[in-house]
Each structure stands twice: as structure tokens, then as C-alpha cells.
Image 1 (tube, rainbow, N blue to C red):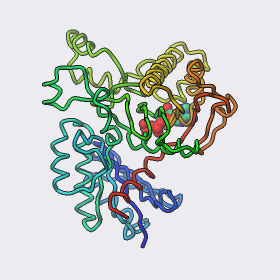
Image 2 (cartoon, helix red, strand yellow):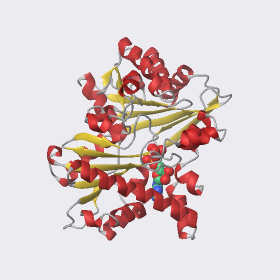
Image 3 (cartoon, protein in one colour):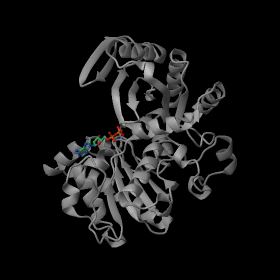
Image 4 (tube, rainbow, N blue to C red):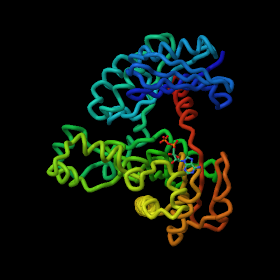
Length: 394
Ligand code: ADP
């Protein structure tokens, strides 16, 4: 019996999906529904190197998922071989410390948690309900972005604010990108040929969104994102760490809270500082002598090395620093500049190895570097599929 896993990742106006074959560790079909709720939406279904596009209204996630099922019916492959559905779920709060089989009680709890992730969880729940209605005979599993960080030490997740307020609203650091941090830290141990239980690893997940984690013996002990994915590193459009006093300051200048939130989430980061959110464009501008782009990169690297240094302190030493996601896997400049500024802490990068472009996990430090530097391509889909299979006991 085939055991394909259907993976769903729902945003407020989009639904991404993959039919994944855990045996070959590769997707059989991938697709996306975009502009859900708008006058005309778009569904793109890719299978066997062919792309099928439909433009029509997709009023909600229920209609979108029905269109996805229809696309599989028309263009294949068949969904008959689906063993389970894995749902990417952004926020598990303090309740969900693990991927979880979805039941009515789980959905009720997710609804309660909506307040913690008002942008992300409601579409996730809509996707879960739509998929469970159309595929009622297979198990559905929720995989939480926060789960890998659920067991952070209290000293790392506690915000230094009034404890009653923190308790009442469950205000704490939760962390995100957990599926990636977990997968990459294990893969790094494999590449180094050492048990993950013996290793202290720092994972730099540098994509459009970016976060960094400290992992000690396989357990995350610190991470840079917080109650929301706004905290921490400089990102494509997010500021990362900033003085919270900016809220009152700009509010006094006439900005609404929503406007400040939009400023920090959508008009900041690399885009805010130099007008380019994509690191390739930033690099091209630096090459062309653009001072704003250079400053934006300096801020990016400064924040990154500050975190790596801090996490070496938190871990009490480090065996490996690992780069992953779009920027971590591709931007040799970022890896070089960050590593060179951490040489005194034992990171000695091999410039030639760093310059090689490859899809494979690899070590890019010199053989005698006290701290190993690695590039490990993340594979959140594989990790989600494996987790889904584990939870259903297959
Ligand atoms: P997310 O999943 O958060 O949307 P990704 O992990 O896919 O992001 O990373 C996307 C980012 O990776 C792009 O915005 C771009 O900045 C960066 N990126 C991709 N390829 C390259 C490259 N060759 N050189 C530098 N940066 C790259």
C-alpha cells in the first residue's frame, strides 16, 4: 500500500500543498491556490514537470481545497494513495508540545489559541476543517512551528514583565521555524558523524523570515523569535529586535498601533533599510557601490554575529554553526562575513568550500577549525511527512 502524505500550508489568502512520497523523499505534485477571497484567484498544480493553471474565484479555504482535490482528479496523481494529511500549524501555544493527531478537541483548542496568532492560525484551522470534510477517512496531523521550542528552559522563554499579565495572556517566547531547526540540527549531527545527544549546535535559519536557535544535545535551549515571528534577526521585511518604546513614540506622532505593526512587519528589515527584500538584489546593489545596501548588510551581519556570540555563551561553547534556508544555503557572502567576524571564537571558514554552490549538506570550515561551519539545506516537507507518519504510527 502506498503511503503518500498530503501536506497543507494555509495562509490567509493562500493554500500551498504537496503530495509527498516519504519513500523517495520527494514530492509527487506541488501546488498553490492564491488570492483566496478575491474576485479572481489562481490555482497552480505541478506534476511530472507540467504546470496546470486555473483562474477563477476561490471564495474561501473550503472552495480552495475542493479545487485542489479536483486538480488532483484531473491532472493526477490520484489521492487514493494518501495515507494521512499533515497540516502546518503556526502556533501551538503552551498546549501543543508535539505534532498531534487532529480531533474535535484539538480543533477546539486551536480555536482558543487563535488570539496568540491572529494572522496565522485562523486560516490554518479553515484548511484543517476543509481537508477533514473532503478526506474524512484518513488521519490528519497538526505540525506546529512552535513545537521544537516548547521545552525551552523557563529562563529563556520568560519575558521580564509583570508575571500576572504574562500569565493571563500567555505572553512568552514561543519560537517559530521549529520544524526546520529540528531537522537541520539532526542532519548536521549526521553530516558530522556524531550523535546529536553529544553536540552543541547553533542553527541559523536565514530565509525571508529568519531565526536562530541554540540546540544542546538535540534539545532547543534558546531561539530568537518570540511571542510572534517579529523578534530577533533582521529579516526581508521585518525589523527583528527593536526598542518596544518605539510603539509609544510613533503613537504620539499619530501612528495607529496597526500602522506601527505594519511598519515593523512589512516595511522594515532589508526592504526598509535599502529598498530590496531579496538578498540577491542587496548583493547586486552592494557590488554597484550602493551605500544604503552596504549599511543594510552590515546591520544584518552585526545582528547575526551578536546572536551567534550570545548563543555560544548560552550553550557554554559550540561544536557547529549551521546555515540553512534561502539565504543561509545560497548567500556565500553572508556566511563569509559572519564567520570572519567570529574567527576569534573558533570559526575558521574555508573560502573555497564556501564558494561552492551545491544542494548537498556540507562542511565549509577548514579541517582544523575548532568550530565546524556547515551548510545544511532545510527540508521542512520531508520533516513534516516523517512526523505525520510517526504520529499515525505508520
Ligand atoms: P521563506 O521560506 O522565508 O520565504 P526562503 O528560505 O525561501 O524564504 O528564502 C528566500 C530568500 O532567500 C530570498 O528572499 C533571497 O533573499 C534568498 N536567496 C535565495 N537565493 C539566493 C541567492 N542565490 N543568493 C542570495 N540570497 C538568496
